[in-house]
View 1 (spheres, rainbow over the protein chains, first blue to last red):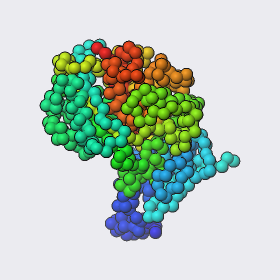
View 2 (tube, rainbow over the protein chains, first blue to last red):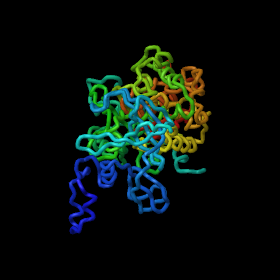
View 3 (cartoon, chains in turn blue, green):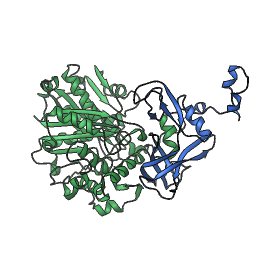
Length: 152
Length: 386
């Protein structure tokens, strides 16, 4: 696993595409537009798109800016902190891997985009500050979840 | 404002339910077929008169499958998936098509046996590469209770609505259902009963959620010339509007506002009415708090004030805004897409054939549909006695 180091070696260009990373799109766990997001998750980085023209952040990714319709967007790393916009305790069985009850939330990242996620905590409330954490998954990229941000 | 739609009146001339509740002796197509026959019969029409067909949830290319079953080859057809509100959208579209001369007799119908088949899904399929599979399914969001719970929780946080306000919606629906022999749940229900039912996804309890039943129905829409033959009183479509917002819950900027804000505004403007003119309100009560949001978005009260608005039984039998008069999705029937039954109940109230639950002198009724995941879609239809 040394894909970043590979970039600095004097190799022919075609080698750049050859890494030992899984391609999540091939697994059905991503699509070509979200592949960079999940690759970043694999490195423990939470990224969203930022429009280089108007500065708006957006997520999920699109090949244009929803705010100004520009087409020059870059991926930027988030601070990883946000605020709970809404929250529910899911008490119904939905997924065998997730025994209820568990906290399901919408978190507004400090950069702006809103994510559906889980809060890993006994309790939480709307308005609470949270920070990103990672849930490891077999054969899939780590999933961004959130934990309470300890107040200083 | 002179407009083609106001100069070419359009009517609902037939309305019929399929069998409701638990249906084990019919298929979905035979259910629609028999209801279509009954609804067309009310209008003095038959299958051969239908030249426009609208359906949803009748399989792939649903209008093609339904058309084949009924022996109808339409010149105007649609099987758009706008969720449970599709049928209000279809009245809007049929109204415009008939007024523009593109068709004459539109049949709008659907049936489901989701209870008998037990085929209601709880989450989107994982690993299909879709955005839902990537960004919603892994978090265990129940489809759609989780989405609506996130809306309800935010609404209560933002405006101070209380659990009693949600429960009042379920109680009002039940009181109407007790007057409707076709309703699924007819036992007396109190606010305390609702608040003591099992919590599913906070703040939504079991009795805050609609039924899962079989059912469906058909309405027939046509212009003034064909409406003259109707055996029963034709009900005029005075106005209609529609909109949709988000599919993925995180993409909704404000979960306390629904696309009913836009669909209601357009429908009321076309009809030339104010909320105070509405005699009967048939909201899509998939969850109790949904009705609070519609009341605000359609202008019956200010944003955040619906909890107080519904207190003291305003929506119940004898209240000043009779709502969910069939018993609604909460107590009468919810076949997966309630929108068709909202139209049928509104028509029956305006015809004066609603029996024990008849609202006296009802002249204007509003059917307000929603669909999708936490208010993805909305369509509002204003109906009136001509």
